[in-house]
Length: 220
Ligand SMILES: [Zn+2]
Ligand SMILES: [Zn+2]
Image (cartoon, rainbow, N blue to C red):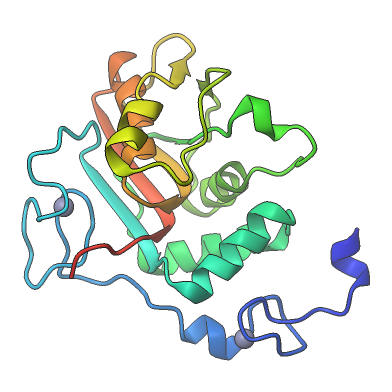
């Protein structure tokens, strides 16, 4: 509601007008090849594994993201999540469809939010993005993945702890479909996506891809 009443400004540059103005939209740092085939990190030439993911056991076959998680994108994602700006999901899905090829799967799932923190927010970015992508890619969205109660927040934890913290945080109802793409808003270290993918694999999904709106670029 507030969304409609307040004079709207660009979330990045504060210019009155759209939620993300045309200039800021074209200024998004899109992630383009060459990439690491596995985790989707930009690389100097195409590689199967990169410095970021070599030696890590990854439950997904590939992860792809539309834009770099830089300062501008951070502002947009923060507003999207914290203020529940619904129209941003459709906007982010458009950006994803432009940049990321339709995954080779039969359905979509999203990385579920923490049930302990969901109350009062009424808006889950990954779920809304997945629902928009489901329409755009004509892939059914199946809500078979859930999160156990009582897991700690990822934010602020060092990387090895992040991995330990999320391992086992997800539950799958019944048997997972054979080929699934997991949707999330941001790929940071990949720990969350990997834990969710791992739960799907345990529930007998043969192929799990990961699609996110943004991705943190940690190594250049
Ligand atoms: Zn702007
Ligand atoms: Zn990689």
